[in-house]
Length: 252
Image (cartoon, rainbow, N blue to C red):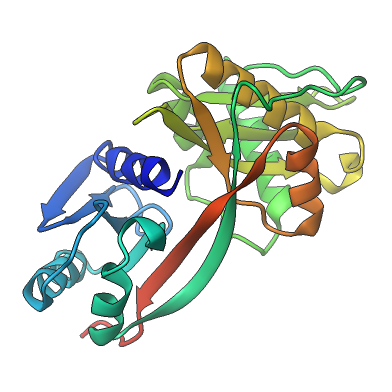
């Protein structure tokens, strides 16, 4: 599975408005935002980067005024981490990822129904709900509603649960499939609606949609034991780890 996830990471970055190949690295840049969670790089599986290639990659970030940052499955490219650390990169985080397949996907009884957004108002409601759900834990994108719409327009999917007041109780999105798999992300529930199966509902629904579109698996990264239990409930199982590295030294 690390190879599938790593191949997906590279293919997904090539979808960015400004993709760049540097040696065995792929960097994806979006001039609409300076967010390091949108603008980052990843190695191709098996990459053994030279010092010059790492320096060239850093240069691509620096000339855009961006933080050099990478996300990758280290098992798929074991020589990358040592090369980056020699260049001054340090650990931002390491996360386990979980994988769901058509054989493991379940939809427990009693989950609330989900919907696909269609109007500007619905995308805005989802963005507002996710901003409330994540609070200060993750920085909200400047134009989250447009990002969600683009995800759906480009072959991915967005699902939400409608709240009693007609707005959004919680939602999530999933990228378009690449290399046989797809990444599910941004699962969030407004505090008032937690414990009602919202996260499980949107996660299960999105995985089902992507399987219908031909994906052989869907993967995600849990943010804690609580979310992990939710995902395991609908069929996600341990798949491996992903490493997040960023350049420790400040940009000149």
